[in-house]
Image 1 (cartoon, rainbow, N blue to C red):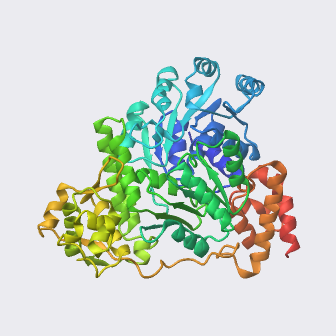
Image 2 (spheres, one colour; image 1 turned 90 degrees about the vertical axis):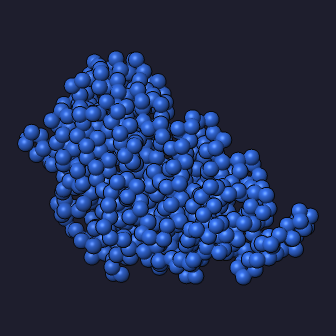
Image 3 (tube, helix red, strand yellow; image 1 turned 45 degrees about the vertical axis):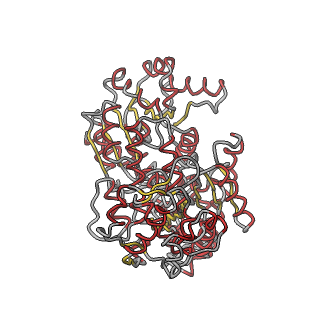
Length: 603
């Protein structure tokens, strides 16, 4: 075992260009090399892929990686080819001839890693082929897809326990970046991993700043956020519907940003083209539904913005986790409104799912709303959801940086609830607020609601303030919305103590100042010394030139963190590149001279 781990360390340095293992990588690799199974929960960007790539290079035979997305396979194989690793994939994007060539290489023992989908793995012909070759290990990527309660459920994942039955002596690794305790138990049960060693790293992505707001118009607030912090950065904007995706992409384009749409309704060729541009070009904003993102290995996504509520804390964590995979400062920004709460609850109520499934999903939505409405540290709550304790507030979320004021809103809550009750529990939020404001409206008068005691009793507050109150009371479960399509507000049982004055109500005040932010209008990162700015830009230009020549995303050549080190250290000899993180032997030989030439020109 000592010899195997020495070889693993050597591969880490010479092939991948890193001098030390991170998180639980060493222990996971040691477990697989000993022939045992492992379950790994590790945050996005934590280095999960090295946990199976390195053992596959140490052991005899081929490492089989089961991946849910074609794009992920192609990106990882391209990156491995740059490192000199013999890798291939089998999927529907290939011609029959290309697939035959991969199968022939597999039979001949010419592959270190093979990426396939769970659907293809379950084909009898594929299982038969694998039984005829030497398999080093099975890696089940995105293992949370096995959970029927999750947002990425794939029924084929439930069949992967067959690996335990057919390949009893081959070690298996299940990896994911998103799993609460329920999902982790389901992964273990469904994949027959009861005896597997379990490695759980911290889910804390300290480089990501979390900001959640329900104030103002979503688009306007998004534009303020982009202009203030990400004027020239790549990022993702998530929307709930295909229509909103297309409208938002067109709006951003009209405002002068390079924005592309992505959703399942677009032609496959357009989706592929937009994804390729997002990976290969700089300063691109992808506006998408949740159909986009899983397996997109782009390290320099500087922000993820949500213009609607996700479905759960798991969804939110996975989607925001696509920001800052390179460990550099990034933003997770979200704007939501009462319509999002209404829509999510309505979809849940009208779904064909069983009652138990509805109950679980309803609880997940409530936990997400708790995260949105809370006034304490969001990161502590986020980590707590996954069973992790953060002793001190993080200092890098909106509530820590700009603590929200709260106020005693018991009287105002009573007015809102009373207005909903007295108008028949069948009108929407704007109508109820108009009644409280005493608005001279024909509908209100014709309904006789101008004669109610609550009519005009809320004139001391504005429409914006009343809607914020309704939103917070709805998020906290005191107000429900009918599921008949009219968005009428009604009271829940939890509202009774408030109406009777038996329960205090403290709500967030509307903020009067913006969260403290980093200025981000320059293409040069803040930690680059002023004297090195020109060199940094020249190194990026060289990387882009090399990437375009090969049809690759720039980060496949070198990550931004590697360019930062080059700009700071300014090596002059080829052997000095061994000290730069992310430059292995193959990349040193292939790209080293070109980058040294750029550095020399600034000497």
